[in-house]
Length: 412
Image 1: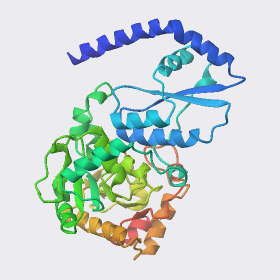
Image 2: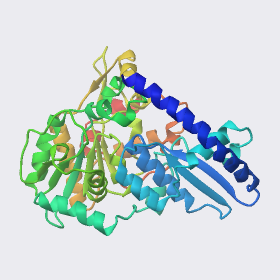
Image 3: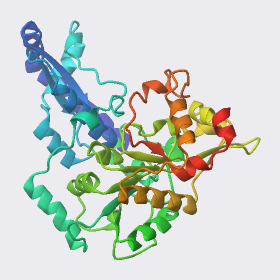
Image 4: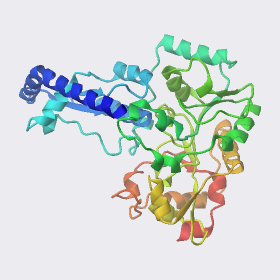
């Protein structure tokens, strides 16, 4: 039934294409005739995944502010989008016109339209030049949106000024249930290496709550609820009246985002909120351009039981679970204690407004290796330097994590 619906939708789309050709083709010709006076470029925004939808669009917004007056960019995106609130905010800040999709389509079909195609950068989601830190502080919410979001939180017992943390722990539930992604793939098992168990975060949740910090476990769809309960603990996916507005507002206003790097954390990133990236893979995906602390999953050689060195860790930066198995690598998730240790460390740094640096030498070795132009990352045909051109002054590895790495980790 699902495949039949897809085929029917494709037929309807083709008929719409033909119908719209009567006005879209003339529009393409006019656009090309006007090129000597004004150059119009068109691009789609990847709206199916919230991480790309947020980060990519912000990079376009920043670049648009620097465009010459004779160049204009138009955007469109597929619907339904991954977040309706972000969709609204983009329409208030970017020249988004859905009719541009038809012009974009026929411009690509008719030879000679290359100059009107706005190619998104390969690294658009990654802020490799530090543009957000220099030029973006977040889109504003409307007064009524701000009021609605705060009311929801105060109804939970929160009071203005009390700190709150957004916790995003990736599991398989979201990709399996996301209807807007069904047309892309039906099986997402190769992403299992990115998943974590929410129960391993529960001691950290309880520690934060005891410190007077509200903890909001985020996510639209999750595999299971929290076992820990408390006055300052909110299991958001199971709450009433949750919304796309709350998704954006909470991530953009939290005092800290703790995430296994699942995509929605990019909301906190573009709003320049502190981040703790924990229990994630691959290591090469760390957020070097952000005020972020990183504690990845560990990789162990199956044959020897030894931990991979830093260069080996980076070399085997795969985005497919099967690749790790084929390379003879065991993925070792962080324990409850390791997660708690990292959360305490990160929160104390935020509270004291300073970054601990007990082992500056190892930190220096880590970043020197990461920025080495000769170090190649496994799945990419380019060096890690291309992924990490600019480092935020507060980007760091967890102090406890890096202190526990042996000399072998840095030397081999």
